[in-house]
Image (cartoon, rainbow, N blue to C red; front, side, top):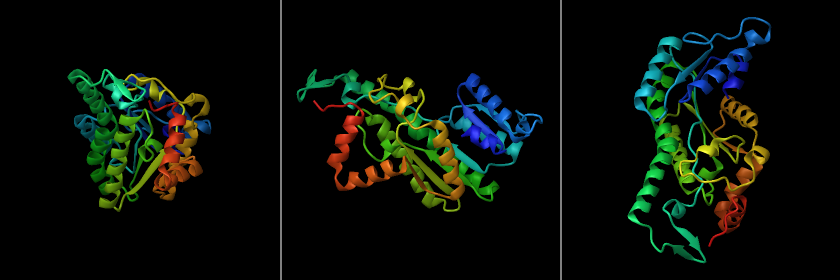
Length: 281
């Protein structure tokens, strides 16, 4: 999305924890700026330029308040907030607690105190990335958006798993669903801000490699069968420009599956299990 905004000539602030990757994206955005495209100087990087990289953790109130201060000093405000960070979790919940379920029985028969605690610790990590981070961003930036932009907007990049429960994604789905519900409620509390909720199915990339539960990818290779990141970025920006609230990707697949889940949930659950190569034991 940073590339798309830079290509359109927008000023872009990119926030993340990994400085090397941030700087690489900032350089790419600067080269994509219209001034560079017409043979002029690339878009300026840095404090007052078109591309502004900031190393920060979006779950940290201190980091986000410091970021807000920088935005006020450099750009005198903010028009659009895109929340697209988070963490993955890829294992069934009881497996996280150390239980192996086969033929309707668990081995060992019960979760130990250590196993339960491990599940709690992993849940905290998922909640921190998928719920606390979006909450911190909302509390920090909604007042700034409301007071400095003529057309404030917020986009939450969520997941189809937030509205259709996926097996083996227990903690991921529940934490993403929580942030989606949070932002839906915020859209009612702050009607002057346009909220857009992007709900894609599997997207290409290495997002799953850092799963907080150490799980493996079970579905078909996302880099071969997933949505293209560029397509998701373009559609997300289009939806924000048009003031759309819910964006399912692919539209027909997501919308129909969401509707059918409430009409015939067992059918949708069957196909969800197939997608993730999950067989209830």
